[in-house]
Length: 485
Ligand code: GLU
Image (cartoon, rainbow, N blue to C red):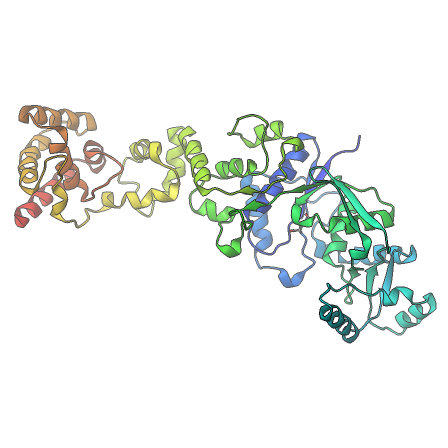
């Protein structure tokens, strides 16, 4: 049996968007599932669309996602080079072979002639189609003009009144009338291949057995297959994949501000959660299972689970996935992963980051949201004493000041500074007062944090701040209250 060989063939025109990453993922999964090879090929024939740094972004994103390729630009392989611009001399002989077979021809039409032709089509409201003018030149004339160094392109000779077709695993049989197809250029006047031609030649010469790509290529594939047939090459299996949509009307796109894979990583999403979530946009394992490691996805992957209909990217669902992944981390791993995200907000050497991790993990959805919640720890913020008034807790500035004044000596006397000891001391005080917890805990937490909402309660905050800072903050808050009364 032939070894399965799939490829991901991105054009380096920008950052790795989620649709691209998902195509790469399915392509990778299919290769792995079938003990095949996953090939990375960079399609950079169109130098005008080339974006600086895009190739590196592709490598980075794929590696981050764990989609390691068996053959490709930087790892090598038997079918290299894997960057189209480095294969540029390969294509002309293939086009010449097609000319010999009558499946392609030299075209010497000038820009002026083509512009005129185009204008005629436009005037009739039709799409331009080359009129095969040069397909009818006799061999001698072609040789003479080539010999004279006249500029030329090579065009595909699409047969008239025929059908071009192919079978797609998802979309079934697709056929188009060849009269609707243009004799597309295979080799440009500078000797370089067009994108379409290089794509076909590369898939064949790299031994690709399964072409998996976005469904936007569905309409070009009949034309590509005419080339396979013209060469007498075996057609690959085609699997066109539905796009990821931002909403019912438009695809996800960087241009519209939709996040790329790296944007999401920079926002504090876990790569595993992103990959898991996007895997399910267009593929279903056939049961209700939602959470997969990459290896589990390989096991579960089946082309039958791919969907023809476009899936809509749901940022809330992604958050939910991320949340679930974060909750599944053990606290050590969470702490280690969290540290870089909070390092700018607090001096991580000053606080018990293990305890912080325990406190933050249960409600953390995305890492980037942690830092803004911690500012009060570094420095006591300036705040309005109106915060001490809380109807539900039945507190106001006067009651708060009394509580603080009475608590300070009690807390100062706690022998060992721990959350438990603080808890015991304050609970005893509350019992003695016969009041509700909130009557004491609300002013205590405000006096320690200056914030209405904090990611931890009064004892935890006091524990994190330590004895000295806690007593100092309480003293300052009491003074502030006194001054305000
Ligand atoms: N280079 C194409 C792109 O980035 C992919 C073409 C293909 O997979 O056949 O959209």
